[in-house]
Length: 423
Image (cartoon, rainbow, N blue to C red; front, side):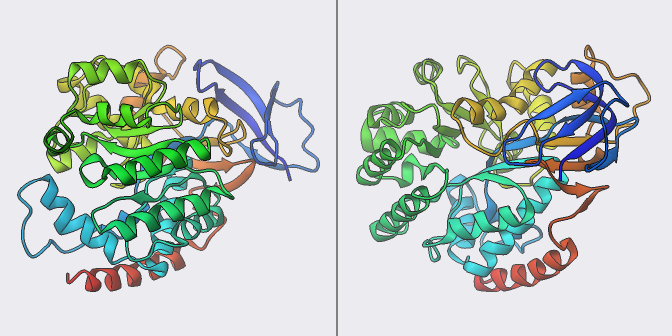
């Protein structure tokens, strides 16, 4: 049944034009919305939501996520404290992903999708790894996201770090999944991806008309390794392999790039996903957009599912390390929609909306909205969320799944996961 949002203040997400309207929301994937003068739309046969005094705009989307990290919150520290970025990966994240199985992946995906929806996001681009549970892992995630009602663009992170057989299994899982669903070809990072795996991944990318999704120069170690092993910088290596030739390719982080790499990336149609909070947490550096061009979007890197929070972190840390203002951070926040639209991915149509219950002590207008975006609006203001024309969050409560039951089971799965990790 179609939804009507009555008496809304609609904010066009791209122009920030404000419009008082009743909004008829088409009930189908990638559907449309129709704006009419308040009080002029017939309500019979529709679900009606009163949006008097509320702001309605396009829902949000996560440009880079890691479902596999969802059960790490509150996890005991590793027996040995990591001293550098590679040790953080080895002692924490590579230990965690090896311990994942079908059930822990499912609940990781469910709680990720629930958190994304409650924070206003109806689309997630995810980068997954579970070396001891590869086959079928993307289906588990997709089905969990579908259950909550959040659209997705998934990939499996192929890597040589667990041996070539598992690298091949990761690529096989990618091919199997791409035969039936939209997705990307995942790779971890240059320093764990050899020539054979990189070449095979690019061949898969071309075969399925997809893109590569991988970490790029997150830490200086990635560049040092590439120079030592391949006598070139990471972006140059990826370019020679053909990984940068797709507008669907997403390169994550991009901190330790030289001027020539930045100029080259600027000349391509691929995208950079900025994840400021993760960079701060891992002490790997601060993102700087200098010479990278405009194809920059924001992600969470698995730390959480709140894109408003990610945008604020990008803005505030960017005051030290980057050239960024209100308009710039809002553009990066919304660029994920441009990425999805340009590349004809499904699930982010006009009928994905968020209703914000934002009672500001000052007026909100087209001219000052980005200031409210940075300093005022947060996930707590997300009241209702419509995904592909379907109401999945109503008055802060999920309608598609039993949130408390999922959280109770996820707590059990987290304990089991930590025990497998030796924590």
